[in-house]
Image 1 (cartoon, one colour):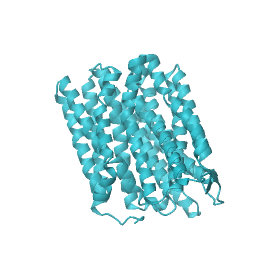
Image 2 (cartoon, helix red, strand yellow):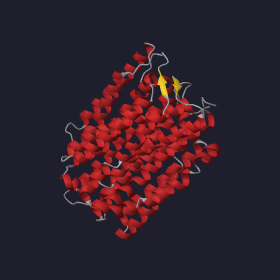
Image 3 (tube, rainbow, N blue to C red):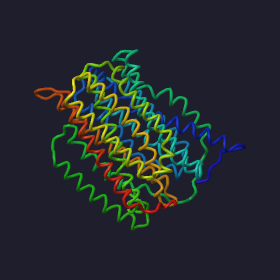
Length: 471
């Protein structure tokens, strides 16, 4: 795609584009984490049942992920600036509807819209990095985006807790849902002014809509039994059948000379597949763990939203401190550095699960604070390095699509993990003998299992490392 609009001082213009992109990325990625701490207030205000609560949290990641690949390809075809601005406007509009809603199901529906808007914006960010930066500058831009995403995840709960402390439960949770609005009002005009215009380059691009529909249906079938829908294992069998149908369709679609949703060059790359599995398991586990921790502190221990959010601050501090060393970690240790950080995270989460089960309340709080710091510090050495290492296996000319596929896998994993872990927590906490401590222990152990899977995939990748295609 030809780009215009970068004039006399392209290096300055590129830095401004980077600022606009990082601002949009921060806004859309903050929106998931900031909502964690307000869920009890939202539930109390609307009298929400468990199922809509699960959809409010999981639905955002679902539509976020499903929008990524088609939005990225449309950006390749027609330019990124309009899609970038339109996605942010849809995202902000969904937030307004959610904040003004009087029913939990309407909030859940608005969150689906917000997720779709965020899914349109984020591939344009990656695409712009691919278009405007090369070499070390591109690596730094991608690393900055990964760090911004991690910081957004870390500072979201304290921001949400502070808003609830100042405004009260209602309208506090509504103000949290409107938090993205000022960001959008600033970023949209900035983007329209700074982002380069794009002209179609004449190459034919296919969206593979049947593949996307099959993937969405398979993920939905995994979600439905987790949010209390009847059918049980029948949904799992349906998901398996749809996955087989997806794989067959992708082979036929590729045989026709078209660009499939699951790009064959990516699925055949051992390094890309294993790196994506690392990201899937770890991303879903950490998002789900942070949510159930917030529910436990407020519903189980009676913490205020601000006090519950304060317990996440050590994690934010640990992440911020270690993120500054993530580039050096990749340069010196490669995949082995990520593997070591995952091992530390697994030990920390395992210790938190044991502490929750055996310590008195004050000891539990102290142990969770320490675990938050250690897990956050490990996360700063996992997210950006794993993304950088995984994307080195992208085939030439498919960097944007590779990044979109990596994000898609993370978001679909997050939607399933959040639904599963919160379902276990809410079901256990509301049982015949309610036990929030047991509920948190079960949820934490499931997250630990996912982190251990992530560690297993990282070990497998490091044990038989293939040469990077980008090398």
